[in-house]
Image (cartoon, rainbow, N blue to C red):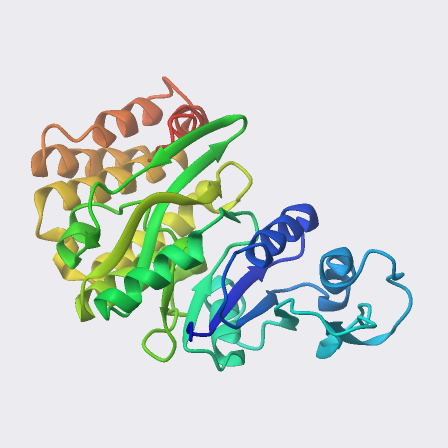
Length: 333
């Protein structure tokens, strides 16, 4: 029998079309095991989100105004809210819409979803990303064969009309790999792990780097099994996370404090120092940008983020322009 999987989809309720597409892609997975999909609403009205998902969770021929007070999917009560009770039992997975009951933000939303599931495995899917066909089946196969706790997969970065595949070039991701590089393909929307082994850390400043932290903690327990095919489409450009410069600085400092090994490998350390230089430059903090740029180039002279930060600090190019150019190539700062 295939293991049961709880799928946690956090949302702030401000992009209903993308959320609907994300849930539809989860439901479209050809997976024989039990799926329990939990949409966790952070800082918005879960009843409105339930209405937004009415056409996904209920048959097309039933009006979304037909019921009040309970959310149903496949004829089962799901959560307090507003949705349509399905008139007949189907084989569709259960979908629930719940409020974030823990600390505000992404980590609290993830943990609310984890705590609501009683499944063998937990998977994450952000509300602006899409699982591609075969994602769950391929990862479950590798987890079962290897006996591992945690799986990821390659991604396809979508930025405007551009599509760029990001592969890891390996079927195993270690702690050393994640210390040298953020490995963008080990993305939260690819995560599949045994329930009870890991939780998101709610102390992450502004939710920044909570996924990198979780992956690093997983890799410290044992290597991550990786399916190196792009089985998740990750949307860039629609999130506000990338340009919350102060939060990004706090998030990197938080990671350095939590994981001192990140400062050991010159390549990985210089990458983080260069990011700090760039974010300070984006905020107009030239002195701090210059200080971190010097540290970047001292640690690893060939690290490109140092010169980029100096160019932004000098006013030669806007930070957002640099990000846009990088994102179009499936890269980040």
